[in-house]
Length: 194
Image 1 (cartoon, one colour):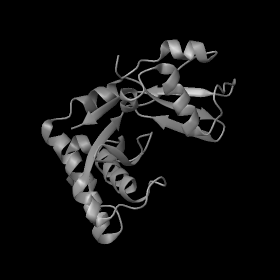
Image 2 (cartoon, helix red, strand yellow; image 1 turned 180 degrees about the vertical axis):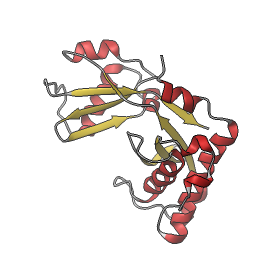
Image 3 (cartoon, helix red, strand yellow; image 1 turned 180 degrees about the horizontal axis):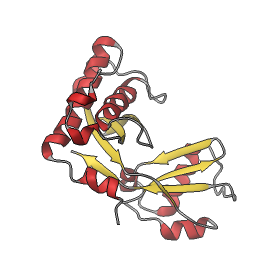
Image 4 (cartoon, one colour; image 1 turned 135 degrees about the horizontal axis):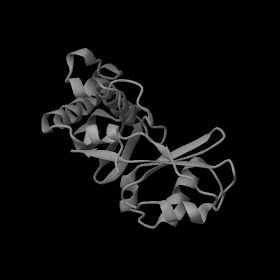
């Protein structure tokens, strides 16, 4: 059953969804012009979008990943989080050079709103794998200072839970098959825009 916080985001109106997508695009355009995210006064925005929210913004060019950055925890108004995430995906994702003006027209923008993460209790990898919900769960893996996440959209390319977990380990910089009593895995659900 989805959390109440995520249920609220699932109930976003078409206008609210369009606003968040427009903010993401405007923040990227503002970044191209001014080198910083779109400044927003959340107090002037729709009430629902002023609530704290966490988002990821994914940029694709001709179907290929071109940037993906976001926050795992809600600590600022959702509308501001989307503006910051969009700017960071375009200009601060360390895997890619900053977006160029000539690329902008070819970029597709996807906004993902995250629900709160909850721990998955598992004594070992087999127990963890049995609890995963392909296509639904986003996962966070933490061990000490190491942390990585994969959004639920990754299940489309990697529907097998073992491969999904292996990719999450690689992203965290952990060796294949790594498991310890210090490993913590959390799950979250998302709302994809549009």
